[in-house]
Amino acid sequence: MRSTASSPPTRAANSTAAPASGGNAGLAVAHAARSLDIPATVYVPQTAPAVKVAKLHDLGATVVQVGREYADAYESATKFAAEGGSLFVHPYDQADVVAGQGTVALELEDQVSDVDTIIVSVGGGGLMAGIAAAADARVVAVEPVGCPTLHKALDAGEPVDVQVTGVAVDSLGARRIGDIAFEVASRTSVHSVLVPDDAIVEARRWLWREHRFVVEHGAACALAALLSGAYTPEEDERVAVVLCGANTDPSDLA
Image 1 (cartoon, one colour):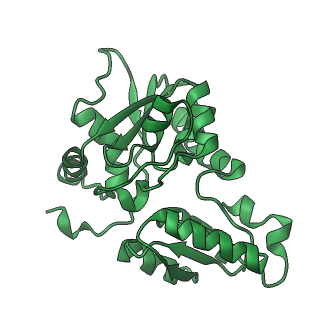
Image 2 (tube, rainbow, N blue to C red):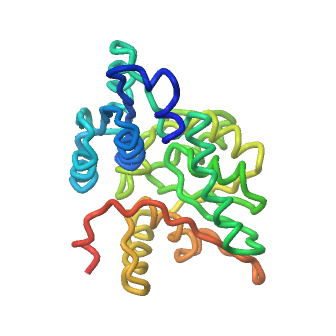
């Protein structure tokens, strides 16, 4: 995100990074923009969690809430960027953004040896694509049953629009998998699995109960594949689970 925000067009006077986000990508852009002294306008849906909106304000971003879904915020953000000459930062379907997200895999493989499989949640697919492109390990992509963008795309042989709903829609609520993510998933034979909302809720609570980790539902989605049996590793398979996203209200974890 910092590399994108510091590109020459964005460094122009009064320029603004204008991302559309369910919340987390907007936070990354707001942080990068503040460090570069660039104003940031972040479009999020009206359903974005209050904790994410508050953090965006804390980082100095101008927050515009529009529509009920990420797609509504996306449409408004692209229009704002086009009309005002601002840089539009795509949260998951932009090459340098995906490359940055892929450094997660490099850090993981540097810290943990001989990982066979990396399990990661999927919304628009940027994190999954970055990891699958960078890692030597196999990648398992996990989505909620109510947000099956990658799963439906792989079935159809191309990205398709889907309806999205469920407990993780605030962070995994893209209606369509990114073109980059689809290409990488197809090329690297990413394995796609779906998990129900109750499994996601239980995985999130399990992380708190057993490890005192506070994560949002979108992050817990990856672990839910293991705990629910949606993905069953082989006996000697070394599995790493990526938990990405802790911008949540922990009051419902008790």
